[in-house]
Amino acid sequence: MILTGVDWLIIVLYFALSLAVGLAFTRRAGTSAEEYFLSGRRVPWWLAGTSMVATTFAADTPLAVTGLTVKHGIAGNWLWWSMVMSGMLTVFFYARLWRRAEVMTDAEFTELRYAGRPAAFLRAFRAAYLAIPINCIIIGWVTHAMATILGLTLGIRKWEATVALFVITALYSTLSGLWGVLVTDLFQFVLAMAGSIALAVFAVNHVGGLSGLLAALNAKFPDGAPLALLPDLHSAWMPALTFFVYLAVNWWASWYPGAEPGGGGYVAQRILSTRDERHAVLAALWFNLAHYALRPWPWILVALVSMLLYPGLANPEEGYVRVMVDLLPPYWRGFLLAAFFAAYMSTVSTHLNWGASYLVNDVYRRFWRPDAGPAHYARAGRLATVLMMVVAGVITYYLTSVEGAWKFLLAIGAGTGLVYLLRWYWWRINAWSEVAAMAGAFVLSLGLQFGAGLNVDDAREFAWVMLLTVAGTTVVWVAVTYLTPAEPLDHLQRFHAKARPGGPGWRRVAGPAAAAEGPGIRDLLHWAMGCVVVYLGLFGIGSLVLGSPGRGSVFLVAAVVLTAWILGGSRKVVLE
Image (cartoon, rainbow, N blue to C red; front, side, top):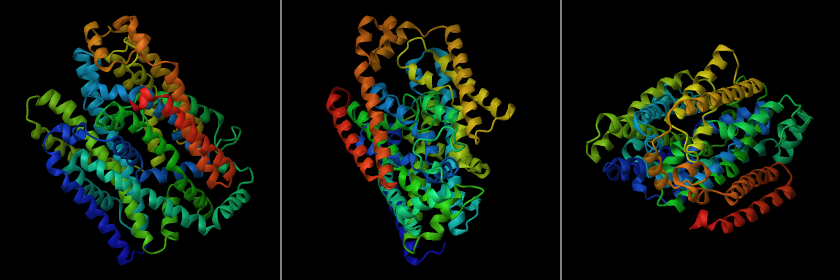
């Protein structure tokens, strides 16, 4: 790809703005760990929610969606569309609970919920596990995707791209803490979305507009499988077993960044940084609406164009980048590269800050230096950020597929989700329940993949890995729960008094009144209708771009009406 002087100027201006934001928040971030990692818990809902969306929009996301669409049709995106149901659980059941907990990380939450040495062990284990192998794998695959883009567009070698990307991103994220991450996320998300839409317009126009794209795809695939929003379950594009696992298992059974059952990870971090419970709920609601309904279609359109222009690519994910290289005119090339840098940096800066919060708050301060001053922990956070960069750089070098990394992470977290949902609403869950779930999922998943030879890149074999891992992990953690002692009653009572989860699962601890205070039928109805709203928005926009404006308009009007009903009928949940 040949860049003009104007293209380079656009890219330089983007980096200058990112660095300026980092420098602007450096002094504030250095005052304490709470400022560095949670922005002093003063973040408004719209900024926290947008930051969540920006974090999930990385350089890898359009590439992975392209790979899914080319191999499995549009319906292949149910791999992540199914997570709507988990996200809406966070909105209506868990966002308020996280904000009430007032912890700094979800690892710290373990010692609020559980007691004694098992809780301390779980906190350290979870923090180290999520910060180093899991978080660095995520940073690694995002960096791999961005390095692929730079290799195909500018001819930069992978190791050179990796070093440059880490140096640039770490410079502002290390200096500015969460405030800098949040503010840059805002303009980075706008830039990344504008770039994605622009590329989709150029790609579709190149093949004769939407009508030309649809006609060419229908001629190439007479069965229409690539364009189906819901798959033909007898088609090889999406086997029935795989679709069942997506809809009935993935969303509640698997831990996955940004879609954790019951919240968690950087979603919990953003919720914990908000001003109050109302802002926490609205942030989670806006995140789920924007994440699922607003973002996907520009990427899917480019993926469909790549099916026509580059059939038979060994790595279908590269089709997205090839469209960039071949179809963008001057000036737009610099804008699109800046947009990809924005998508990349918004994600990596979050993961660096979030991962460092585990290392500092849940390992270093908890077990090594519990009595240091606030500024000391802020400095430790900056050092932890650099450490994570080094580890992630090594992982980046060995990654080859973004989609494969997605599925690998889903598989090793399979079976843990139910524990994360129930620990808020069932007193009998203890620290060993979580340890058993995490260890069981990891061992079973790796055993099925490397011992039994099941390949998560194969749709049917991925489904079997998920089903067997979930079943086995559930048996393990339920057995461990009943074979180990319950948490002390006084500790459970203190937790319930602080978080106030309520529900029949706390009757034995807090008495009959607790059941009445918990979630009820109305909350379940709002959750279900919230899922319907997102899917109506998603498929409404999809119908508009795929040539069915009447149906799309009906879907979108219904989504608006249902949203108004939810907000009006759940004032106590959302607006008060």
